[in-house]
Amino acid sequence: MLKKILIAFSVLAVIAILAVAALFIWTRSSAPKTDKDLLNQLKGEVVFTRSNADSGYEILKYNFQDKSITKIYKCDGICDYLKWSEDKKKIIFYKPSSDGTDYIYQITPEGEDLQLIDNKKISIKDKYIQAENTKIKQGDLYLINDQEKLIYDARYDGKFYTGVSRVSWSPDKKYLIFIDNRYTICIADTNGRVTKLTNGKAFDWKY
Image 1 (cartoon, rainbow, N blue to C red):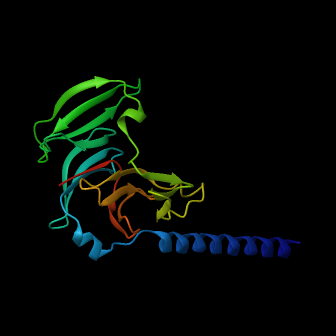
Image 2: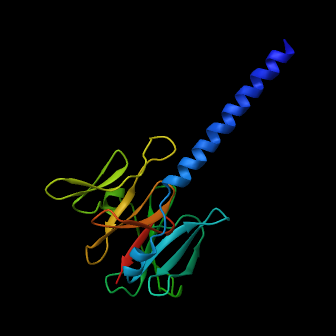
Image 3: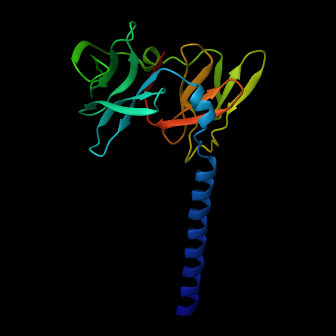
C-alpha cells in the first residue's frame, strides 16, 4: 500500500514539474522580443512608471536616441496616469487615495520642482482614453480601418495572461504603444511588427 502511495505521489510530482516547465517555455516563447531594427526607427522620449522593491513606484524616462533609461522620481505609493504637459516641459502624474481622490502633481523631466496642482475625483474613463481606430478583442490588439487587422497576439487565456491594455498612438500616429500581459511596454507599427521597450506600466510619449 505504501509503495502504491509513493508511486502515485511520484507521478503527480512529475506531472506538476512538466506542467511548470511547459508554462515556462510557453511564457518565454510568447514574450515580446526586442526588435532592434524597429527600435532604431523610433524617436523622442517615453515617460513611464515601474514598481520597485519597496512596494512603491518610480517614474522613469526612456530616450530613444541613446536607448537610456533615467530615473526621475521615487513615489511614496502608487503613481499612475503619466502624461507630458501640453508644452512638453513637465510630467504630470496622479497619486490615488483610499477615498477615490486623485492628487495630481507635476514635476520636471529632471525630477525637480514637484508641485501639487489639483486634487479631485476623476473616473478611469476620463483619465484613460482608448486609442482611436484600435480595438482589444479577447486580449489581442487590432487596428480598425475598413476591417480588423491583428497587430498583436497577446496569447490571451483569461487566467495567467489577460491581454493588451492602455493603448495609445505615437505623436505622429505611425506607431502604437501599449502594455502586454507581463507589464511590458511594447511598440508596434501598423503592419504588426512589434518590439519590447521596457518593463513598466503607465506611460506617455513625446517627440
